[in-house]
Length: 395
Ligand code: FAD
Image (cartoon, rainbow, N blue to C red; front, side):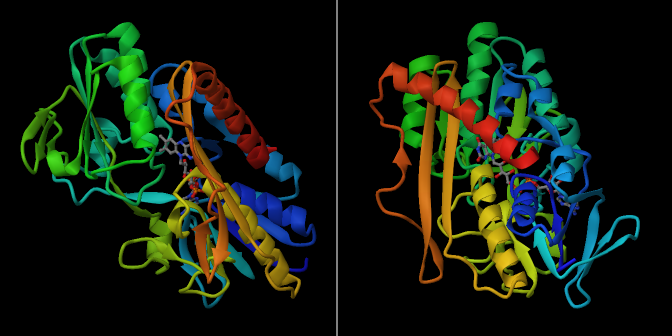
């Protein structure tokens, strides 16, 4: 083969980078290494928590990528050697590369909140910020909660995966409670004082769920310092909160692999060249998706998809001795607030003086005063978006 490219992580970023490298140049040998035999999508997983959807509908395997000529290996990568150009699997396997693309997603930092740990998240206080077992655990906790109970969603500081996610989750929980536990209450205890699509969310919550959802901004006491997993008491900076179910979404940083490989900055994210996604720390290693710092782009699945395509084109060009093509980047994030109520934020981005910046006038939010038909259509668009992007990844 012409060159060997190893992609680590088969999610929204990595699956796309692997596929589009093969499309750009079939002579490149592409190996995708993913620790899990299947992928569970975070997008639409808030609908699993509300019981609107089965987790099987979010679960995909890698046969489609194999059919496209990508060598898919199930392994956990535990080390990167940037000098010798190889990555090492948990069992000792060595995968040599000419170019490496890392798309490993985020990891969770439990330290800022006393009482939290991975073991607590897995057993009692699920974050469900990686779709799978914790998504189902949170669902069961809502089902077991008495009517009149309180759910506390603890929302993390910026930057984090899926900025509208905690607020869509509150709406999906309310959708379930409205029909099954109408006296329930949802408290969002936020480390921040503002959030994505805020005016649209707050109007939608009010319209469908009245006062069921209460948002407590950081400045009003929303910052949480500790949690007692036994009593489900949350210690805030100003006051304490008592809940029946706690969904604490931890502080985040790049996945452990990226941190261990020395590819992160002091804040825990990977600085990269904004045109090629080449790491500023290591030549021949590219980082895309949630783990990377990508200018004005949010940490979303669609952003990871867009970055995967830009990166694949740049890597294929480099292998063929060509300059990287001029990039264009895109993102849309839909949120489903009720059966007939969707909202979205869209952005188109360009490279300017080495930075990824929004193209003025090319994006925006759903109108605040949209009619009922538009809100209902946005639910259709959200589901259509999911079908298209997962078909792009896995077929
Ligand atoms: P991931 O998709 O997390 O993929 C990383 C992969 O790498 C994983 O499969 C993991 O197993 C693998 N991996 C990690 N480390 C290793 C290793 N050492 N060895 C082998 N494999 C490894 N985005 C949207 O665009 N739209 C939405 O509507 C939306 N909704 C969301 C709702 C929720 C509740 C959440 C939590 C997120 C949502 N997102 C949404 C965000 C989206 O899920 C992420 O931005 C996206 O998954 C990022 O893609 P990624 O490729 O960087 O990481």
